[in-house]
Amino acid sequence: MNFAKRVFAGAGVYGIVLLLPMYFLEHRLGIDFPPATNHPEQYYAFLGVALAWQLAFLLIASDVRRYRPLMVPAMVEKFLGAGAVVVLYALGRINALTLTPFLVDLVLGVLFVISYRRSAERRVTPYSKSV
Image (cartoon, rainbow, N blue to C red; front, side, top):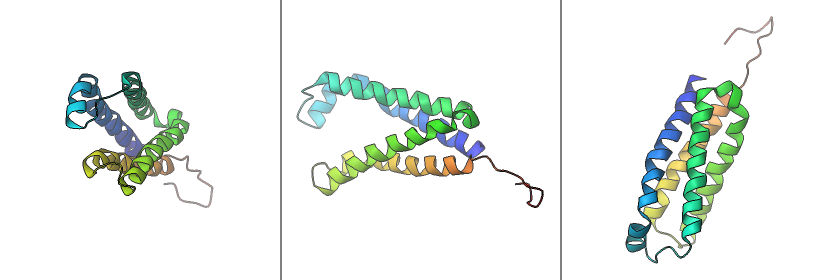
């Protein structure tokens, strides 16, 4: 349980630190990575959903056993997002600089899978050793 707690707490804090400043960077990102955002409502909606997931990660970390089922959609979130960006990179539609943070998400997705497996209830039978 401690492994999963650390993984999800770290993911939540990392995500908040990474995403929160983006609320103030829309204009700058349009300059550094043109074209400028044509649909600011989609930009800010994405940030809102992404930040909500960071809070879910912190919630999971607060009580791994209770919120373990929430790890499944957390894994899906990581793999769908990172998978889509990896495909975009493979098709030449984005550059390596854009890909890099999503590779972190891919690693977090793998850590989420490991956390899910390690946090499973272990049943002790009279013939097995306690783990």
